[in-house]
Amino acid sequence: MNTTNRDTFLGWTAAIAVACIWGVTGVVSKPLSMAVDPMTLVFFRYVTAVIGLSFIFFFTSRSKNLSADLGSSLKIDTKDIGRIALCGIVGQGVFSLFNFLSLSHIGATENGVIQGMQPFATVFFGMMFMNFRMNKIQWGAFIASAVCIYAMSVGPTNTIEGGTPLLGYVYVTCSMLALAWTAHLRASLADKYGSVVSMLYQYISVAVMGIIVVLTMGLDLSQIYIIFSSPLLIALLIFLGTGISGGSYLIQLYSFKRIGVEKATMALNLMPLVGYLVAVVTLGEQMAMGKTIVVSLIVVALYVFTKFETKQEEQIAENLACDKKATPEVS
Image 1 (cartoon, rainbow, N blue to C red):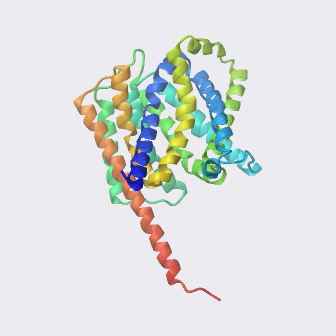
Image 2: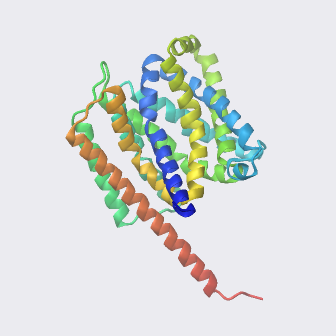
Image 3: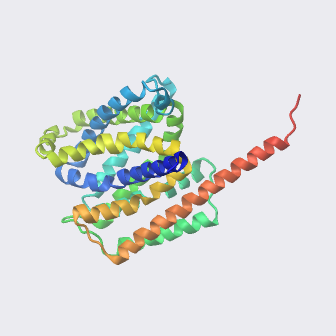
């Protein structure tokens, strides 16, 4: 295997690994959300994430290659504090809270599929606030996925004792929208400060808000002993806080370097399918032929949507470059 093929292979392996890590978020969160109340779990998650990402920053900031993309300094502009806090509290805290709440009413499969709709929601918010546009193919992919989700919601659902499926779908939709709503702002902050630095401050803002909530609402932090009493729950919390919310960014950056942002992002379309398969294997959730087909169709729709979006962006960039060349310079 020559160097080019090896880099491509390793790049795709890293990209798929990120899709797998992020795809199992619902599966990892499920046992934790059943053991600890959601509000307290959000606090535990982001305290763990702050610790984990601080260690990651300590090492990456000393590497010239890594620090260029991940961030080399903790210094930020005062004007960005509010934007970072907004991304943290809404895009992380609210996202996680509603995500944990949903898992008391629906299975990790259904949760993962709705969370996988973030690319659509992100573009919709871009259309509302940033003058983005969708073409006919993208609209077709969106409508097809919406029909699939409706079919899944009215079909056989993994029932949770004492849960209300409709409420679960509402919760996870709110969670997904909270993350999608802040996507463009998160991206701009990552470009300015580096992904690790910007995310670290967002996690800190959630942790600080968590302390305020603990003091005002009197959350029972003794629930941490429930987690400490189980090696499995300890491992899941560490993975949720440092793997999903930390180390995965390093793996994603590696994939960007090897195969490019566009191709690496394509791999994330596998997230709903990964979440579904892992939920069936590890949590014993229902595997039905109809649901398998629906999840697969959603993955295809996501692929078509993001693939065409990439082509559209490339075409716009080429047109701008051509226009620039055609425009005579004024001396």
